[in-house]
Image (cartoon, rainbow, N blue to C red; front, side, top):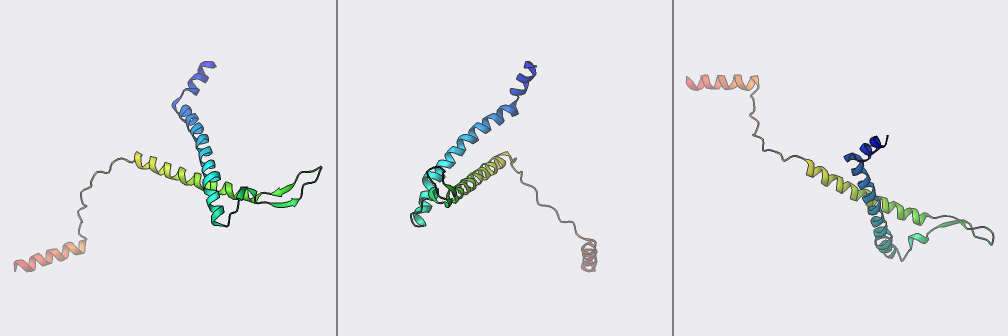
Length: 132
């Protein structure tokens, strides 16, 4: 059983998947930092110095015994921007990989047009008339 597990774990696809997951997690942190620390403050300044992380709709305020219940829509907006940037970058990466995988196109000879029956008949009539 240990031998089978070793064969499974060391297959190329499993190792590639593990590397992809680790790089993806690290990339996710980079994108989160980009959105949280660079993009959202700029958007906040453009929209009037709004800090999106603090935007919320308070349902019940906090009391001495209970915490505040709030809908934190600012964080939701931030996560949507996070997702859109991540999806766009992944789209670009997949497009790049697909372009690299495409084989170089060989130049094709221009296709010879085969005349239709009508065109062939007209050409034959033309040739007969020319010879007379």
